[in-house]
Length: 205
Image (cartoon, rainbow, N blue to C red; front, side):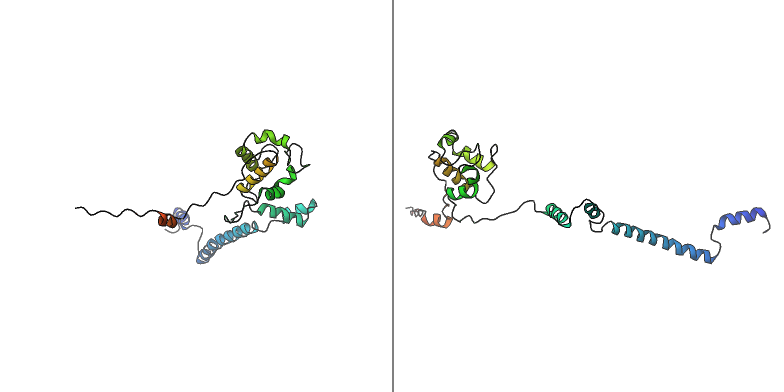
């Protein structure tokens, strides 16, 4: 019966490629080894992409004559802070208009200054501007107008910039009052103490 060729072909078709225990052990070993090798290869590929920049890019920069200092400055420029937060003492004395003018405005507005900017004590240049009013002049100073850059948000408070505007405009013939901080509201405890006491209820007869 085992000599039947049809039976032999059917038996070989059902046995598969593994015919002895040695082949089975080899198949199991390689079925574990192959995924491990693939994982190790992928990890090596990913880690090689995380090397510090400057190998290829640095070689190219060196090729074009860019120094290490220039590369460091470029990196520092990329990493610099976008903005800063500054906490100021609200109780400090306000700077005078003259102080703010000398520190921040004199480069353009002190004679000879720059052409087109109204200079200190130039009544002819300040006359039309004074007619626009203090609020308009302050807005131009804080936010800029034409070639003049915005002055707000720098070393001085907006109120101090306003004092410099008054200093300049008054030197040109204006009569603007010097702006001051608004008076602080009275503390609630003081208000309560100074409030008149309610009338005592009268007894009904």
